[in-house]
Image 1 (cartoon, rainbow over the protein chains, first blue to last red):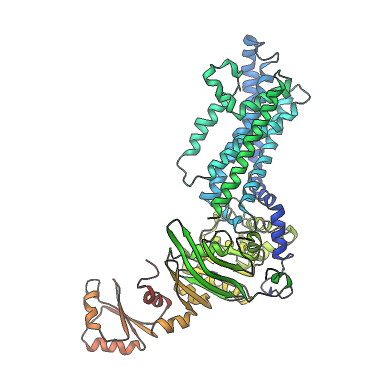
Image 2: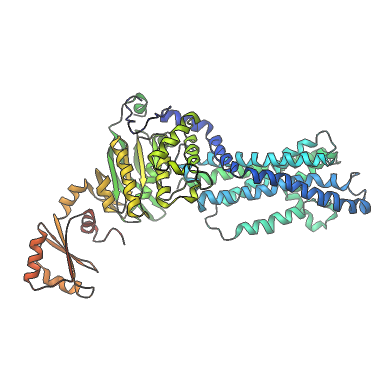
Length: 283
Length: 317
């Protein structure tokens, strides 16, 4: 590129547009993920404090306070373990699901509508589906790390006795994606913010949190409410978490189903999001 | 043709559009327009809001699919080679879409990463661009704290991070105060001097006159006229314009009394325009007929007059 008239600048760009395009084609999703990391770095301190503070608060309140009461009265209802051990996998998974709820709603609306931050990278060599992927990678890691911290704190409380308990870090993150990616696909279609996000929080996330076998086994609920658990990624993550954490007895096929259900919904949400991004940004 | 840019030679036209059309349902936003832009030219699309300028820009920028027609950027079809075409371009959108959560300098670095540019290049480059945009002392500020003009300059700096040879500017100075506009024009003029091809849309005639070597006047998705600002004025208007104000009630009634003065008159709600080669002479004739306007003004013809002549409407409604 010797004919380049770069008199206005001292620094010449070290690669040709063709090379830029080739790199973007290969690593574009990671380039956008890098952007989300840089944004998250601005909030690193509050995220870290939240990641440690939340588990401590929950584990003290439920695990020490409530558990003492429950273990004194209802011991034996929880598959032979104490209440805290029963509860912990559900808490880890629900914390992951709740951060996913925020991260797959507001930044998407911000990107398309509020501050239109997706349209900056859209003018670069990145493709719309890479912007979607990059956000998913960024949020995935953003959820994986605090989930790992949560798990470590649970272990320190002595509530993760099994050898494979640590695998629940990944099943909890999968739960977050299983709920978050279909949510992202839906939010990507929104053109107006008419209070839908508060509705999601109040009428979807809260019931899921309460009725997914979180605080008590799902089968103690009346039958007509149990379906909430079956479709809830949180129930699937909680159950598989219990299997991994303390060897909760359930048929193997059911354990496989938990993971398959979460995987399938995550993949469906992912593919749908890519499609919607492509369509919405190519108009 | 696609390999031209690799070998270092430049295609004859960096942008070539023919019969370009874009429809949204029944609405035709861009209606069968054709134009070619040679390298290094500063080319403008002048027209009112809703004329189809931004839609055209988005198609050139490879982010909007055309309905029909052909389009080639650096010899490439943006629909077939989107990432490659976009790697050649710098884009300043109509609405700033900076990341307000990031600091000013980080906005430039993050953007450069989308092109796969290494940090060893981007860090010093960001400083260089901040200097160019006169934002060096704002490097560590949050974007939120910048004024409108500063944000605009940062968006322009961002668009230059890959050293594009083609820069697309969609309404670059809309919403800015006069001083901020002049700073921006100065920066854009420097880019033009350095050989960057500028494609800009505007509904400000003074901006078009300042920056464009050549422009097309667009209205309702169609090209009404094409040429340099001076040639368009020569072709569609007279050398001078006499502007008379008789008060909002009399403007229309007095028009009949002005017949025959100058080459042409145009009656607007707030004033009457008389197009004449010699404004002073036209003014004398007005006085001879005993007409006493409240105010009178003689000025050179501008692109605004061209637009009025072509469409019967003003640029800014």
